[in-house]
Amino acid sequence: MTLDAVRGALLAGGLGQRMGTLTEGTCKPLVPYAASCRLVDFSLANAVRSGVPEVVLLSLHREADLVRHLMEHWDAAPGTRLHFGVHERRLRNGGLPAPGERLPPRPAERGTADALLANARHLFAPGARDILIQHADHVYVHDYAAMLEQHRRTGADCTIGVQAVEPRWVRLFGMVETDADLRVRALVEKPDHPTSDLVFTAFCLFRADVLRDTLARLAALGPDGWQHDISRDVLPAMIGAGRDVRAFPVESYWADIGTVERYHSEQLALLTVPRPIPAEALPRTLAAGPPRFAPDGAGLLGAEPAPGALVRDSVLHPGCHVRPGAAVVRSVVLPGAVVPTGVTVRDTVVRAGEHLSADRTGLTALGPAPRA
Image (tube, rainbow, N blue to C red; front, side):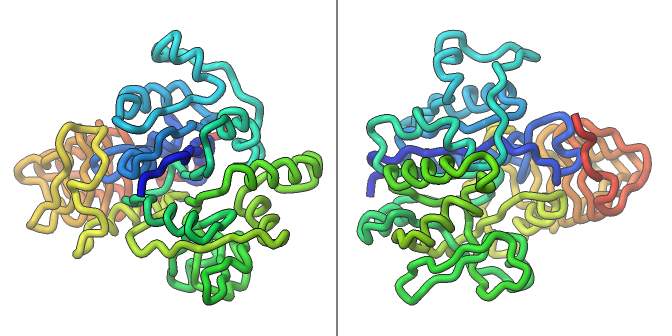
């Protein structure tokens, strides 16, 4: 099924405060991942793979860096056009922002629904029958065609991705309750006492007219009358009003990278067999070729460690350096990082461009990033 009359909305405006110092010098969507790409590249690759005709970027923080990356790597993707929202005309006429240049600031947003409202004239422009919501910090490989087929066949007002997880993790996500026909009866964000093992994968398809109407009704409540969020307001309002909201089960690997711990653990999860995501399926924006899964248990390698180095169950990004006599165990080493001779890193992340001078174990060194 072709994704005709579908317009993507790529939410890429979060500060990434729970990512600690990993976002100290970059916006969250540009944090490197899987020795191959940056977080935002998964959603763009999924849009291109599926044939989404247009994706509107809903960015906010450090936009110039994000725009440069997307224009360099995705703007010429066949079949999918990028739209930069309020910056579209400036970027199309003036080209890439110069290094250090900032784009004009956008109005402040309280949540994801505010991003939709701020870009309403671009999202709801003629030609869009359905709006596909994507997030710039989710790791998965997916073709949205089957989801769209179900969405239109059932006549749903909204179709949301859902996945079963271990009950202990449900409280970290939006919990979903459905009936036997996959109609969504409730969506509760981060429940204290979960009653279902289904969680919202946060990608979904809205009928454009229904989404526009729901946003207008919520905005009429005034700035303090709602929480300005898709999961906390938009979807519960639709469910409460009796709108037809359906669930689409997602069986393949999916991860929401919201914290330092998840960033570390989910990259190591890629090393399990069978591979959650094969190397050749990873987006490639950090290097021309894919990383390789080393057969000797070293891990996922986008760079080769020096002879005499020990690497086990780790992810080495392109441009990093693991010197002779260094040891890297269950760790992620980012581009430009150096692990010198005699230094051991274990169960941690070595930041981009960081030159270690002492051993490191655990994630405490990546504590909260200082506020700008």
